[in-house]
Image (cartoon, rainbow, N blue to C red; front, side):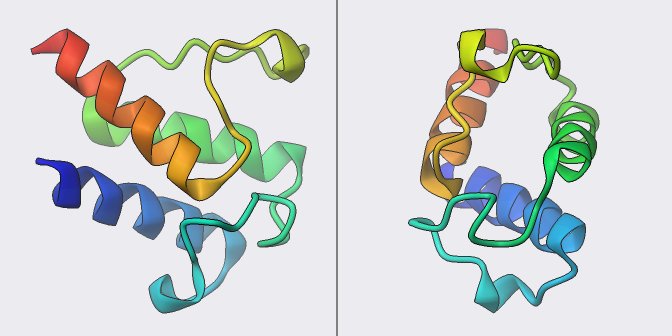
Length: 87
């Protein structure tokens, strides 16, 4: 499951950043990839739709969110946790 979640999250982020999948590294932050706040919100929506989960993220107060967006790896780990909690 882990690889599949990682691959899907990276594909979603790459699409939002208009990058190739291989250009998205796990250590990159969304800012590194050129994703702004609107792109972040669109990425969250796409992740929710792809995995049929609710992401605990408030776009108005991202610093108060339980969803770690500090790096691509953090986002993958958070999505894996939400997917696991749902099953």
